[in-house]
Amino acid sequence: MGIGIKILGTGTYFPKKILNNKDLEKIVDTSDEWIISRTGIKERRISSKSELTSDLAYEASKKAIKSAKLTNEQIDLIIVTTITPDMPFPATACLLQRKLGIKSIPAFDISASCSGFIYGLATAKAFIESGLYKTVLLVSSEELSKITDWDDRSTCILFGDGAGAMVLTASYKTNDCLSIFLGSDGIYSELLFLPGGGTAFPTSKNTVSQNLHKIKMQGNKIFKHAISKMVFAAKKALMLASKKKDDIRFFIPHQANIRIIESVAKKIGVSINNFFINITKTGNTSSASVITALDEAIKNGTVKNGDLVELIAFGSGLTWGAAVLRI
Image (cartoon, rainbow, N blue to C red; front, side, top):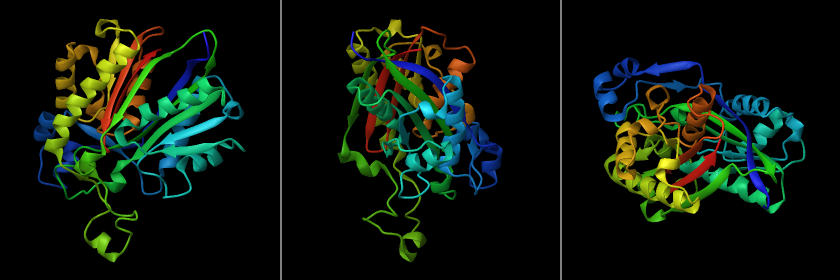
């Protein structure tokens, strides 16, 4: 056996402020009943004005490193996945590195939207298996509330803030990452995007007045692509791992919409009871949703040592991915 991947620890952090559906009724023309029936979301966490994406990442990282029973100095690579960085540059990973007090190791960001954690997992896996780095801190941290259009009732009901982290290391005895499958199709990039602030629409008075710095989404079109690509990715990752759906203890999907998750379960051919779902209290936290759900499932005993789980995600890009892990 060559170099395998061992998962040493995980951690999660959510901001303290809770925004529930009754609160949203005061902001836009919507209702608690409508939101729950369409999305499955009852509440979401919202960061304060002073809380940064790197702050959330720092809190989740501390918990993951403690769970791994390591010191900060034993980390030799930091990867952060986010679409809501503290600033365009430097990378949020470098800002996290400073907060952790770790010097002279590489740190960089990945932008793959809601599929970010699985893309980051694939990247960490490649670095470890190559022998280039031994112990990786992989963090997904998002503050979607700060790019949400709170006047758009079709999108503002969906998003929340949070961060999750995982520590992985090289192992010659075990391999906790059985397979990863990734995909993307840029032809659909304008179904879900944030136009302002880049070179296409540099920040100006016009981009601000036109509300170009907020999330734009064609929800109905995203819905069908999300289902088909998540099912496709899930099946491919199972095949690459030489596993069947019945071998998986829990499927942990991107927490975007309960109707999407129910459709994915049906098309894969497994009970919704085999899907771990926490969207009710978190909302859609983009790349952070899969790792925070996994951490919760581990910490509350739903997923136990030795269980096989499959992570499945889909996001802007359009991107998608799945991974089979042994916990």
